[in-house]
Image (tube, rainbow, N blue to C red; front, side):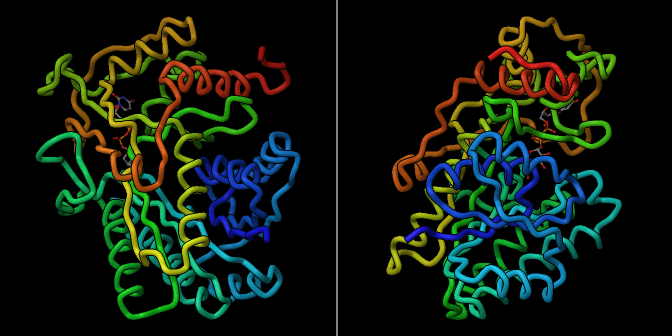
Amino acid sequence: MRHKILVTGGTGYIGSHTTVQLQQAGFDVVIIDNLSNSRREVLDGIEAITGIRPEFVEGDCTDIETLRRLFREHPGIDGIINFAASKAVGESVHKPILYYRNNLGTLLNLLECMPEFGVKGIVFSSSCTVYGEPDKNPIDESAPIKAATSPYGNTKQISEEIIRDVITSGAPVKSILLRYFNPIGAHPSAKIGELPLGVPQNLVPYVTQTAAGIRKELTVFGDDYDTPDGTCIRDFIDVNDLAKAHVIAMKRMLDNPDGEKLEVFNLGTGRGLSVLELINAFEEASGVKLNYRIGPRREGDIEKIWANPEKANTVLGWKAETPIRDTMASAWRWQLTLSNPNEKQPS
Ligand code: WQD
């Protein structure tokens, strides 16, 4: 029987790529999104890739009656993947109530609805931010959770605890917490990708916008870190690889009723790349010379973090496999599509 999955935040960056992978794996998808940080046209992109238009509900998950109506009108939802959340670290410092209300309110409502409507499992988007500055790299799931440095990071830690407490209480639900490292890139078709509103805060959209001439230059935030080239190190993971892990996690929860009720996995490549190495990979993949300069450190940045993804590799049988060059090429193709929406891209 085909499983039906609710993807909250499904028109967003990771949600849209995951919807594509779910559909291609034979799942039916219902999306709920309030379009606060995404556009309805993303549904066209998904449909152009898979040939299937996901069912779409425009609504806010912080309103439990909206969710109850959705579950009544779309009966038979087996699982939820929860992407609906605010995600800008800096903004969260200035608007903590918004972040706690959105991120925790949504999760609480979903967990409350699950037993009411017979939904068996929830995959939760967590983050490597829960580890703070690691004592050692690569970092595995048993590493200590460090005090959060932003309200955003705190919502991820609290969300993990809420899910743990609900499962401990004996609620008839299962969960898999996925701790993402740094998702980048776009679908190879360039029909969906990241849509940063305003000035991008993250490295790759800033890189591609600079290369496209939308921004004058990229500032590399510090080259005096204790790393080989002095710039920070991250574990950049292709968004399509990341999306595939959600499909595997969902199958694992739904197909093994007697399996673990709560599991946590790091989703990274296991390879750390510095900011300068990432820029080089972009230049190679795009053939564009990037205009950048070295600037001061950004407050709150972690010096180096990369994943030990062994647990996901062995237990889930999942591995991030897209070469960084392909990922940077997809990010660039997507940027060109955004800059020239009417121009057909070379395939
Ligand atoms: C990467 C590196 C910057 C922009 C992200 C998310 C955060 C969390 C973890 C989900 C850093 C440098 C950046 C620029 C630069 N994800 N940089 N110039 O800091 O790892 O955080 O992953 O929970 O929400 O934001 O990612 O892309 O912002 O930065 O030099 O213009 O690029 O200093 O070293 P980060 P990022």
